[in-house]
Length: 313
Image (cartoon, rainbow, N blue to C red; front, side, top):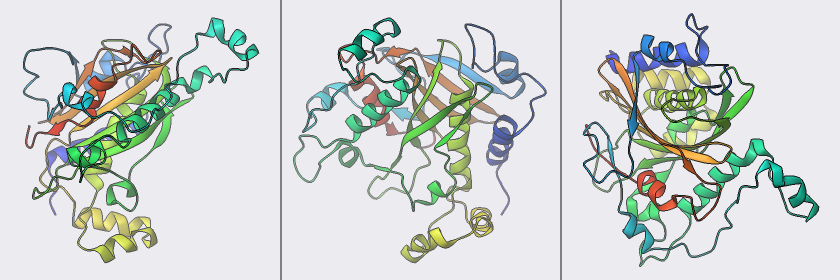
């Protein structure tokens, strides 16, 4: 079948960013901005970064393909069990904490631990009336795990460009709305140890977004339960043939992604990405601290993780 322009652009952009040699410097190695994607690279590849105020009382940008849930609604349905929050211990206090016998997470792993906690908290059972037991049930989303065909192409860990460190993804979610055709929207929770800065995007964040979008582009349509059961036995060429012959979203132009990004030392932000004509538009929120439970904006982030997908936005 003839491939849409958006699909071609995403495939090409993925190869340029993830697999190519960059004629223009890709990420900064300068102190204070290490790991940030260079502005010239973004410009030359039609990638636009815009600031996004999650807490604005005004209308959200019309281009956003997600609408957040009410935080008051989330607060009305607490988790059924307490999950210990991974409090951040500053470097200066770590030796003292170890002498006291405390379990101290390595600085490199703090973003991972925060992402792990957030994922467990978001997907935990909550005090609902039947038939619901979790936010996933109530909000009509599902975890994407094998043998979901998306997972045939999904990358869950990879290198942060030019840093020697790695990014990873803890959770993929997709809409599963009753009596509604499948939607291409994906929400994900990711982590990496790099420190981020407001107003920029890390190379690892851009690679994560493009990896998710590219996997959605390559995802194929499932025709039967028998087909699902046979996926583990298919080789790479058979999967590629299915992807070319019967893509899951052949007419999709935007491939929306909502990314909860945990970064060093223990902070997080939201990024919302979509294709628009020939450009990749990425809305980026400010950084929020997840170093202390009382400061962590859990309900704000979960209201977006389980946001309603906007078809065609």
